[in-house]
Length: 175
Image: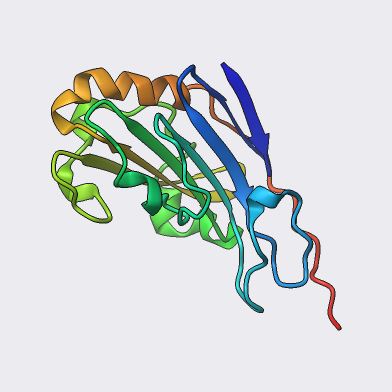
């Protein structure tokens, strides 16, 4: 297993998985790492994102790893955790579930839960809050028919998820 942690989010990546935790820098902020990417446009709020998958993750994948979903084969899994504005943690959408789930069931997956339907795939999505932070957990199975075998792989990763209280991002420097 490989420990992966940044921005108060951590997981242990099982063998055969790759992952990253990143937050694009706000406008005027210097990136902590090249993987965080280029700064956001002025006024855009940036958030922490976790991508973990059994396939290579493209460097330019969107927050919900749109660039990786199409490469999932019938034996692959993708786990995404996207943080939202801290003020959302008490909003009804996020407040119903706390903490972020550390396991999911085979019956929780549906082909209708995908952001973009791809033949054979299925998804799971849950909004939740933990330690004052608001998140969306999104899990994609490359093979819905293989869910009895793939869900335990997702759960092995999720069981290691750690979430620490948020540390505010530094204020951007103005001109």
